[in-house]
Length: 583
Ligand SMILES: *[C@@H]1O[C@H](CO)[C@@H](O)[C@H](O)[C@H]1NC(C)=O
Ligand SMILES: *[C@@H]1O[C@H](CO)[C@@H](O)[C@H](O)[C@H]1NC(C)=O
Ligand SMILES: *[C@@H]1O[C@H](CO)[C@@H](O)[C@H](O)[C@H]1NC(C)=O
Image (cartoon, rainbow, N blue to C red; front, side, top):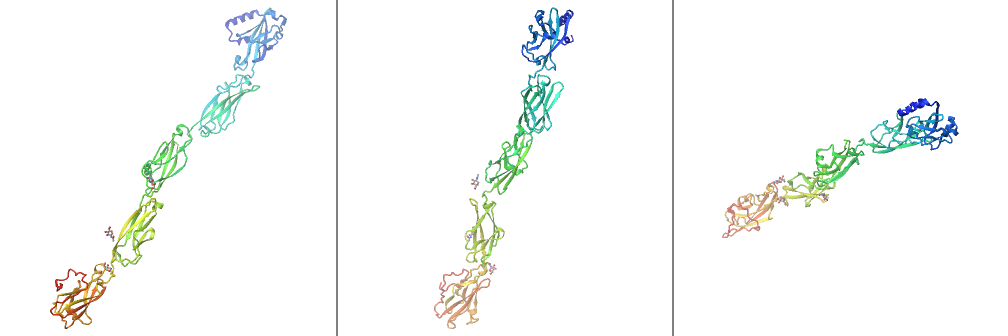
């Protein structure tokens, strides 16, 4: 009777009916229990019913046996011929009882003549007919690569509608490098699994991994169900950008035009999205360098912004930073070597010049010390020097890469008193550049020339009784030296033969060399005079000549002077008294 109370779903009317039955059924036999496994076939025998109840099979059919279930489904029936209780309807334990640990169907068995009521309990045994199943075929997990070891990620539990050992008993996880399995038992839901991070993830190495979680039950045979756990590793911007090269070294000719691309730096970032998006910028760079180059923040291309000049800066060092969206940065070095172009002509510098140079300087005397520079480099700066005409001068290497201009011969001022020496400096660039410089050298005088008379000797013819003061002749001596070194002064020397009186008869103008008659001459007294004339230059060099004065004894004829060297003009400062008598 107690069993009835469990039928809480019985309707009130049924209760009434049972109460009525209790009153009329006098023969109420005790409960009977059968146990069957679920899902057995229709017609299968559950139990030897009539035998168990002690009812004669022969009379069974006459007693109108019937089974009454609480619901509409008649799960069992009675075979009136054999008296066996047989299965009438498939019984699914899970359908009937869900997850309840025990499952039993209750029904009443009625017999009439006399009325009998038997309460039958049909226990339905679970059969491991269900697989553990996960709610979804795939479980998607997103785990940041920054997740640390020991972090746990719970997985939806697997369900197995079977009960007891036939329900989920445990889990296994496919072999993998990163996760281990931890299984928990919870009071109301059973066993559930967590995956535990054992070895940290690295998105850049593996951005996705698949694990297979298997849930198994304890039935025989065992059944299992699997789920794929897809782990997507989320980026944690744990990667700094990396340049393809830490140092970029390039060479650019100094005549490169504006806008010439020098180099393109490139960095990569293994991170995703904004974390991996890079922008380039200069860092730690001098203002001058910044003004010289431009950098494309997106492409990393470096171009020339202002003209470069090797002679000004032969090498630039740039630092370029690549920054990702989250601010992680890396830097690289760019060395831009400026290649020299032969754009500078040599420059000739005269360091010292000895001008005027005395003419008696010996051959090899240094005239000038020359230095040639070329701002270019290497062969562009290698300079060869030469001089236009090299009869009198030559070049010779001197101290500290200087060049000496030296005399090749002893110079003679009297031949050439000034030289324009043109120096030519040519570099070895391609094309070569040259420059010129002219040195004017003045040769100064040395008194190296003595006066030289135009004639070895002079003769003059004069008639006696000529008036004193008349000019007889003149002598000329030349001195090729300069100024006083070349200024000639004439004087009469006392004649060895005639002695002093000579001086009273003839006068020699010391400047002009004109000889005048100073006193009366008498043919009868002396028909011929020999004068010795001295020419002396400003520094004391002397020359001598002799002048023969031939006296003619013709009283009615004017004295005549015959001078061979009339080609020499008379100096303009000759006194009027020296005019020729016949003019
Ligand atoms: C730079 O100089 C070199 C050598 O003189 C020459 O060949 C080249 O054309 C020049 N480039 C420019 C852009 O002027
Ligand atoms: C040297 O050059 C100067 C200036 O050009 C010129 O006046 C002079 O006559 C030249 N001298 C010689 C000897 O050529
Ligand atoms: C004349 O020659 C002397 C050396 O003999 C020299 O010292 C002097 O400077 C020269 N005078 C002139 C004006 O050239």
